[in-house]
Length: 494
Image (cartoon, rainbow, N blue to C red; front, side, top):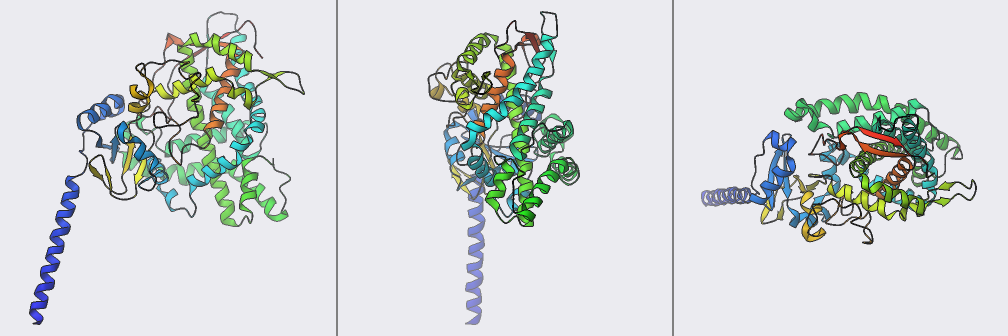
């Protein structure tokens, strides 16, 4: 009798193993097809390569990129992937694609905390923030335009746009984050260096180097240790120490009178309250994240917009007229000025920015990580897998944007009610769903301030009437390369 029981249990165990085997086999057979794309096509012609593969094998394909399997979807599945956060995690996907899985192990949601901070402490105060930030952008763009004014030649003067843009963004963000007005050049350089180093760790420039492309896993491990443990803490020490001292003063005295009441550190202190050691460390970490996101990402978009204006110069006279129309008069100084209200009335520039963001060739932009085995497009997408929709299939979709969807039209969005900061399933340079970029209104305001300040005092063009896309796989964060030329205007607008 005992033997028979053992036999029964053994038979059941075998049956269970067989069931599990065939269940796994069944699931594995139901995975999306894995498509091989050569390194040359992946890094030089990614748009054509991915779109062709999706057309042949879609609606979901798997592609190995940098030793990591990623699933790519066509436009039909984009909404499900980007908005269903229960199945496709934005936080975990962002952490994975930025080479920072450690973010998922923190006691608080890093991305969620940044999102909450911006929505609570920046967006409601845009009316007061813009007048504070505007002089910073005007100063740097006027300095850039002065190079053209100093030249007696009518030929365009070559200028270094990126340097001035990064300086302006760093200075404005130091004012916004810690309330630092007129920061020293060393402080500004530190902020720029931190943003650049975090961008390297996040893999933003990984496509550009032979070693990082060819040996991605080794590169990720090396660069993470080198920068996150040694370089970034050393570079960030100036900003971190400043924040830490401010927190210590508040902790000891219970007062924050020495802080700008509208700076983000001050807002974080109000929200945190107790300022225990872990709270202070958390605030310091958040300032690092804001520094990277605000300086690097917005600077890249500004360069894209300026270069596009340089090759589409027919838009400049109309934009200057719009600037004249929206300028307000400062009640104290009596000088022409731009406010958040006037910037929102800059519909033509807003339309141009939106068209740049739609047409600059984004491919793989917003990643999610599956939280479980997910049925999608007739397949099963495995748990803990990166997945992203193909951006160009939506940004240039004729059903969504008309028969001329593949054509750049600067004033396309005028009168449409769709702004450059709007998001939808057909337009998501700032993301989509719950974790869409919370600071997009601020970013667009900063872009408008900088563009208007530049074209108010200089005419611009591109050498050879062109620029070069140096990383077609990552146009989102890597700006193009080209030579901007400035020519003096006979009359300043302001």
